[in-house]
Length: 265
Ligand code: DGL
Figure 1 (cartoon, rainbow, N blue to C red):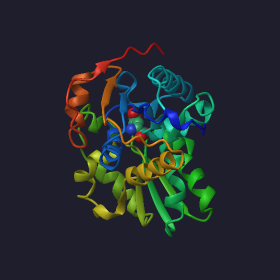
Figure 2 (cartoon, rainbow, N blue to C red):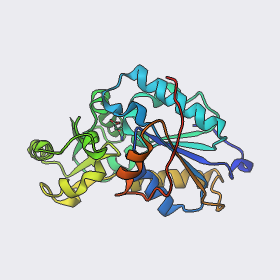
Figure 3 (cartoon, rainbow, N blue to C red):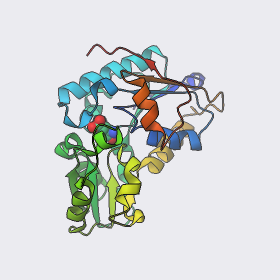
Figure 4 (cartoon, helix red, strand yellow):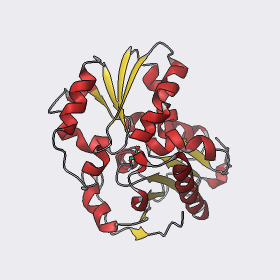
């Protein structure tokens, strides 16, 4: 991660995800640090990220990071597990602002929390990358990790398909592994909590948003980059602004229709 001078602290912090999922992180951030100037980008043009190639995900990440660079950000939060798993390593040294990827930022706390068996529900791309297993094993090599891809869940949250028995099926399969916690390794999945808790106790599921925001806050503080200023926000999407507002409601009250930014990649 790059270092920034303290005089940069009044600049905004960018957040991005493929859609409304990252708002589960963004809402936690606004709750804990309401005075930061924030930007949110939902890349609905390319949703879902879970089925995209690494090359495509790197292309989207670069374009969004370039957009945030033009906005003069002091930091960017990759509020998307799939992009953190597949694009972060490629782009991380190409910008002169801080970049916080969700998986890599949360792994130490989760791996050091005394658990011995952990399940992960995530997108196909995140599971294929084994990013959760690899990052958790850096801090706890004997932790047993079972990763399961749930390809339909993002579309359910974004209103593009119905749940059916898919959620129950994945949970029952995961419970055979006897996990002490199941990480919701896609920022869309906390939107499904009402459904998930029909098939397993709510406490079994771990939404990493709180751990992630603690990490970001701590790091910004250490670097003298917390503002205590305006609390202004700007929300952008690459497509479907009405759908974004409609499906965001569980986590965040988006007050006006987001501006559409045309991505060329
Ligand atoms: N919410 C994102 C994640 O955390 C991406 C989901 C998708 O678009 O497939 O992985």
